[in-house]
Length: 347
Image (cartoon, rainbow, N blue to C red):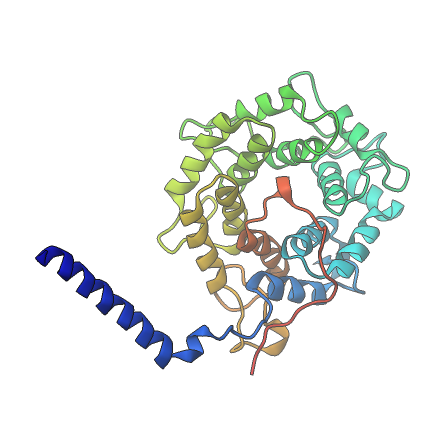
């Protein structure tokens, strides 16, 4: 009888405390004003950096050159954040323009580059287009033609073969969205490059297999997309082992940065490691320019948290957006994205 009475008294006391909190703090029940998320604000800043509203360029020795790869990174970021869809449309149209496209992926005869072909094919699919007809070019057929009997995708070029873990992974991610799917040999070849510590190297067949954060993050996503989760698992464990105390990731010999952390965060979310992903998101959020920064920079994500560098901020921001949302390449879609470039809500 005494025990039953004590429980009732405790329950009554607990309910009384809850009631008091509810009555004395009505502001807690009111919804906060809606504003752009961190990812939306970052994608909005990125959209405003597009030259002529359609492209990015890289300047070398005072000469500006088109940067199709960074422009496609922005297309992925807009899709991940679900904003700036109009900017994504214009950016992809620019990369798909025959002269711009062929300078990037090659003419298909004397020059054909795996990574560029796969990345463009994936971007087209993400935006709901048909990668078998990009200005009359079947990127899927061209990509499959670059696969060797071993399963490795290699460049066809008079300048040499620059294929690596990135190009192999992007090829798998792009082909995973096709009716024929991923060639088993392609996934097997990528899985076979794994280092003894569980990570994946950027370049295969080196004298010393050195795991690379960026390559591992992308390989993990590609292998999971291809149904090779057992081969992706060691890569996930290796990523967890090298995550910094601040939640960030650094590539070989570097400092924790937005690029590597953005890629790793995607892999962690896709691989069902929510706590590690949350820590990576916290790190990325700490690199974002907030209302205390210059108005033109607000929303951008700095590369490493030092002095804000516009030269590296665009790529850092593009890759950080995918990390902030956790939207990996395998499931990325622009469906339902809204137009416009959000700006942070600042006083």
